[in-house]
Structure formats: C-alpha cells, structure tokens
Image (cartoon, rainbow, N blue to C red; front, side):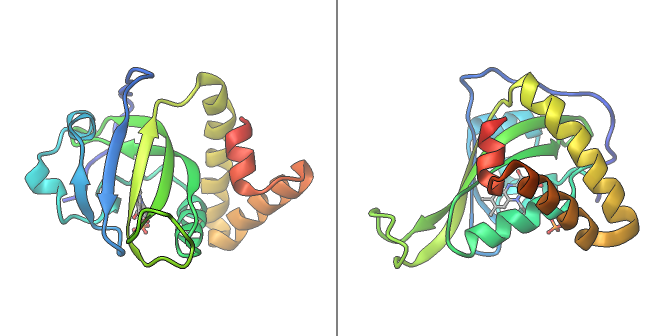
Length: 171
Ligand SMILES: Cc1cc2nc3c(=O)[nH]c(=O)nc-3n(C[C@H](O)[C@H](O)[C@H](O)COP(=O)(O)O)c2cc1C
C-alpha cells in the first residue's frame, strides 16, 4: 500500500549514519538500526522490499537515473534524497551510494555483488539549493518527462563546468 505523504519533517543528528545494502536489483538486504528507526518500518517489512518503498513523490526521476547510471559503471555517486517514512513524514539525506565488490580491493574489474548506501544529515545551505532545483526538475518532468529534467541538469552542469558528483559535493 502506498504511503500518503504529509509535511512533517524528521531531522537527525550529524553523527548519525543511515545505512542500507541492496542486491543488484535494488532490493533491500540490510538496514541498520538508525535507518529502521527513522523510517519507522520493521526489518521484516523492509528486507526483500525494493528500495523505492521509501521513494518520496517529490523526488525527480532524473536523480535516480544518475544514480543507476553510475552504479552500473560501476562507480559511486552522491545524491541529496528526500525519503518518505511509514507515517507519511519525510527526511532529507546526503547519500553516498556505492557498488559492493566481491573482493575488497575495489578494483573496477571485480564483480559487483550488490550496492550499499550511507546517508548523513544534509547541511541547511545545501538544501536551500537542492529544494528549489528538485521542484524545477519535478515540474519539468510533469510536462516533458525525464528528457526535460535531464536538459535542465545538463545545462546547469555545463554552466558550472562540473560533473554531477562534483556539483553535489560542492554545495
Ligand atoms: C543502495 C541503494 C540505495 C538506495 N536508496 C534509496 C533511497 O534512500 N531512496 C529512494 O527513493 N531510492 C533509493 N534507491 C533507488 C531505488 O532503487 C529506486 O531507483 C528509486 O527509489 C526510484 O524508484 P523507481 O525506479 O521505482 O522510480 C537506492 C538504490 C540503491 C541501489
């Protein structure tokens, strides 16, 4: 059943890490205690569920396209993500999502066996940039689909002369 979003925000301390691991399809195979607490779902409900179980309708599709494009390379990526909780409230994170390699030397030729994400509380300054940007991307997607939001992002990155991940880490 889909969760109905409301405007209540959950914030968490700077030293807290929210961690999940997934299989190659993005199904959750591990969630740490902090993640379970903030989402307000049981391990039983989350384990085996696709990660979009906590997808918030305010998230533009293009961000997840960047995410999966990087993971398939396989490379890590950073992203600001608004997630939904079981009670309809939301929380913002700065996520670092990386491929999990079969061997620990993280060589690109190693087999990817899944993915994992570590999330921290984002800075207020970054959210002041991200919130209006995501609103613009979402609006563009409503009329012009992901092509429209991709165009906005590529124009922005070109203007700044940076790659997506460089932009995210610079704000
Ligand atoms: C390790 C990992 C962590 C993810 N974390 C989130 C997350 O916190 N929130 C989210 O909405 N999607 C997350 N995703 C992306 C989802 O798999 C999915 O692509 C996204 O929710 C968009 O859903 P959709 O493809 O059904 O539109 C994560 C994916 C991976 C591989």
